Image 1 (tube, rainbow, N blue to C red):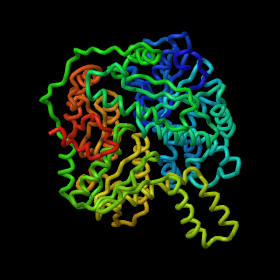
Image 2 (cartoon, one colour):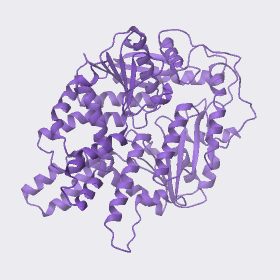
Image 3 (cartoon, one colour):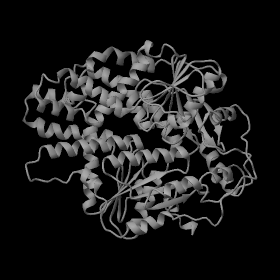
Length: 585
């Protein structure tokens, strides 16, 4: 495997479902390369980047040297900062030339999540296409966003190139698309770099779980559709065979080995590396070096006399939150957080429990990679998914059938081109989101949201829509926009889901800060997959469990409600109601 034998192309992407360890592996790979004397640039394209936390170094939208790692620089592509710079590049040349009302309209056009994505994409493509931008480095290692966002970004060079080739650069979303034509050559070069296996390797990262491996298999197919071939697979954090003294560890290993034995056919042909679960969180250079050391076959060091969590320690269960939620007959429950923390399991468990209590419940997801068991759709519970492709298709059909019905053939042709803009997806998905939020007036809507970066962009679109609505209201008029619903703590309950590990807790805190700027405040936190709540007595799990209580206490100090879900011997994805935590009582 090239991660351990030193043979590596110039550009390396780590991608996969959220929470599988992409950041740790990207950081460990970058450190390993510098240990071999290479100059490396580590880049995060994740809106919820945390490589600065891993290295305990303040990293932003500027290339920054990493302390104590000679030859390693890092860059976090900050979507908000990139968007602000992008806005200024577009607006500054015309400021003073156009009326203030026109400038205000342009600013509003450039305030949505579409602009944020395009601005981040501009920086991303420059690193791929401009040799001068990375001339001082032997390798550029990308820590990418969760799969859905990454697929969108990787497909954008082709999308924009075709969009511009077809002469559609002056269609809808003129604000965000302004200036794309001048970057046409850059986007074409980016496509060439991404599809050249001699220069670019794309490494899929997954956990030994059916859902994560299935997501990786879908990624292989979707990447192939845009001309990019995944080359490697890493199955991360696998329970070592040596962990035989703890029943929970044995049960976890059994279900992981079953998932690996049934790996999807699309992944079978990839060069695969299995990395064992480590006792420590991947924070700091020594921990990162140990990660690839275990990948090279060195045993995981475990202390079987490690401190354990007091067996009498108990935390509130998820069922306690459901008891309180069941006190109303309508409203919105939104499960938010980093990918891979179990938002879907928590959302499904809450929805099923509320339906069992006789409530009329609608369960939906805004996650492009989200999947629910459709057989749950029965009785008091209905299930749906906001599918971006379906939303875009139906949006285009509706606009052509309404606005297009009054146009002549040339006009319909122009409108059809307008609707092929990549920005159309933003509008279509937001409409579906707004429809789901509106249902909470008459029933309980439980929403499983996309990973943090996607959710922040969706909140941004919600704010943009609210400002646009308010701007067009007559004096004295009022409108109940999705943003006002989300800000209403009496009808919207935001549940932040995190894992009891340093980085996920920090990222969840960042999410709550982002929400607070929109005057949206969490109703509760759920700490999921807690080993401390499961009370393992020995081995690797006991070592990891002993590090959790301070983090759980940190969460408890900042939330009015807390639930802790124990790590279970049985995968809660197969029986979500287990997550309610009644077994802890």
